[in-house]
Length: 189
Ligand SMILES: Cc1cc2nc3c(=O)[nH]c(=O)nc-3n(C[C@H](O)[C@H](O)[C@H](O)COP(=O)(O)O)c2cc1C
Image (cartoon, rainbow, N blue to C red):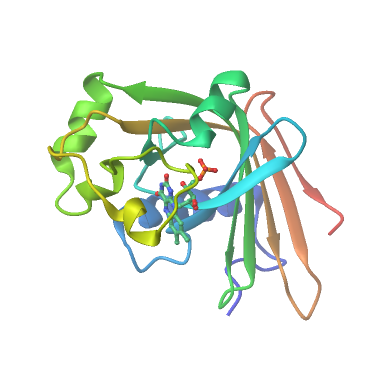
């Protein structure tokens, strides 16, 4: 079953997508829980999966957690303009986002999120820096003596532009929503 059809209005489509992202922030089973997060590296776009931890539907902000020592941090510091890609295979629905990233490290926002984490705090507590070459696999599993928020970072992603594509036997449906310039339209798929 498609999420949208040829009767859908732009307003309905926008509402559908924002609700999907909202659900992804709350429901680990959502098809959009794992999103492809793209930053600009020196020579190549750099893509990796991350978990969508929270979505603020009013502010159009997504929240992602990471380790301050990871490459994506340096890339965001050099260029906070990022993109996100997600696809629900069942619904045949693609979401593309362009966003402005801000880093929250050792501040009120990162503290709030750190305190809300029930399990998985170890992910941000490896002894060695993420991405560092190692001699053996086990070196990469060693944790710091304390499990704390020393390197825990929240990435806030403010959506500036959104594009969706519904694959559909009767005809694909594509639409864009430019939140910066308040401009939206259906597009030739
Ligand atoms: C399903 C899945 C979910 C992931 N979630 C996260 C995440 O929420 N945060 C994160 O920093 N890395 C996450 N990773 C690991 C990243 O994809 C990536 O390997 C790591 O963050 C290092 O990326 P970087 O060196 O480009 O910064 C996830 C990987 C997979 C496969």
